[in-house]
Length: 185
Image (cartoon, rainbow, N blue to C red; front, side, top):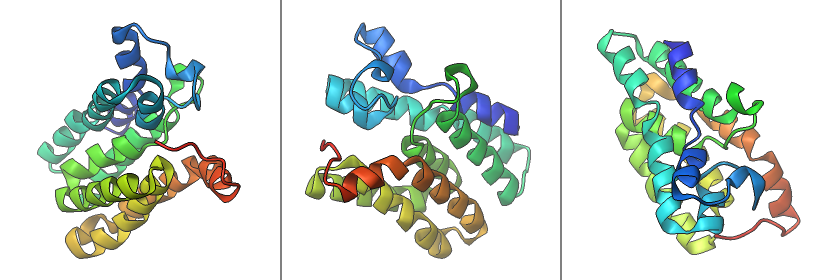
């Protein structure tokens, strides 16, 4: 199931969406990141929303299967973590993937919908107010473990792993934020 999670996560929605739309790959322009924010800056809301949907739903079948097989929360969480690792480090693209935020949202939407919705609400508010996807992503990632303590305590350790992965994937963004060089939305 972990392998299935990784393989489903390694499908990068941005690449498929951009290829279907006949526009330049996000690997070759903008930040070079195959994710929602780069597609939004490069190609607009419609393609960014399609990217978000693909990246959020791609791991759901593996998670539903893990749940249907009666996996305990920690094992479901490992399948979810594999989805995020597949998205962030896809073998098909020389381990160059996205930041994992949309995929983490999809995983949490299946495993702990209350936490996912709280994080999405914070992301939307922060992105609208601050106009920076990285800050919104970091804030919502940091909210996830706290919200899971309250709303989904069986998944706290897994959510901490999700948060750490998202933070690691955003180290370059954090550096650019400190220097005032992070691009806005």
